[in-house]
Length: 41
Image 1 (tube, rainbow, N blue to C red):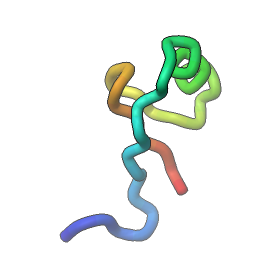
Image 2 (image 1 turned 135 degrees about the vertical axis):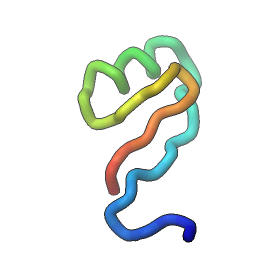
Image 3 (image 1 turned 180 degrees about the vertical axis):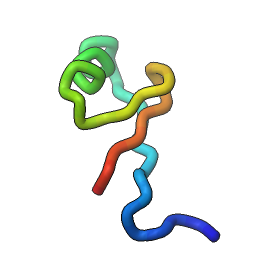
């Protein structure tokens, strides 16, 4: 139950549209929508 080592973590939403776009383009984040992205630690 809860977060397990190796699970992706939820990151706070980007503050700007440019920030959201750069997250998607970087490939480091998995984004379902502009406000919900996860990444590996």
